[in-house]
Length: 344
Image 1 (tube, rainbow, N blue to C red):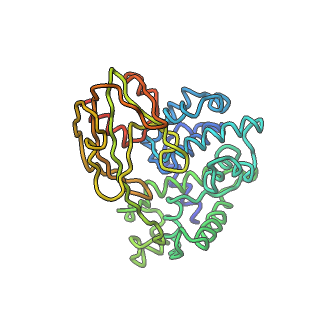
Image 2: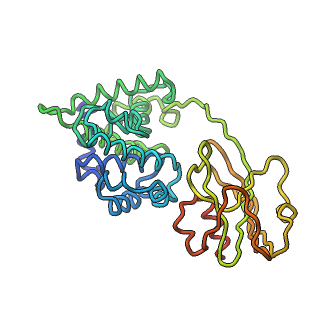
Image 3: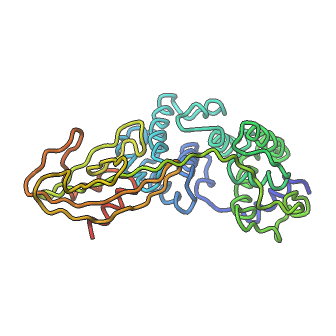
């Protein structure tokens, strides 16, 4: 059997049953693809269900405020996805509906080549091959390709190969691209996994280059280009008369648009917060040196609780909210950890 036929047969027997695969609604499919960027299915599925329950259509999502969308997104991370999701929903409404061409879909905010191909094939049946991490891995191993997957040359090579392999999956009406794309993604996620792939039970083992050349652990190849930056934050949770102080993080930095308590970014030596505040009251260190890892940086944070004797003057941009209303504001995961310490 050919590679394509084998993959499709494996999928019929082993494919995952997922709610967004039971529809051709471009809104439901687009929403799932944005949520599942950088997110595992078991983590993302409850968010997809909550979004679909709260905003049944793209028009309802477009009518929401950015704060509402960010609050619903809280805990998923990579918050630019939520902002792009909201902006794209408004684009779709302005266009009068979802674009039905690959280029039109690519024009939506936050939609790259992979996401556009997924929406195009799943919602509209367009013959566009998806190339995600799973697909890169399956193709690199089976065909023994050493070209780095994050190089310009590699992206072109793998996309061209995936497109070539998709064509035999199309029926006379040109349909079948979505099925093949789902099969490739599931095969990489369930069978040809990053570590400990199920090679002994693999239906492609006879033709897999990596298996025969003992290179399964070496492929795919990825160039190392990421530079990790370390930052140190000091968070002070101010509590006065049942209220606390927060501000919204500005544009151009991590967690844009989310809220946080008093935050001082420390450069160099750790901060003596009690001396900096310089006002009487109860001061309690909650937790120090909390490590929080993001894609491009590592954050080290110190948490403090301060209950001043009188209402302090807040820095520019900060405002008072009732503590009981805090859950109405979207916060980054690191601030969730702070709030857990405060609530102890």
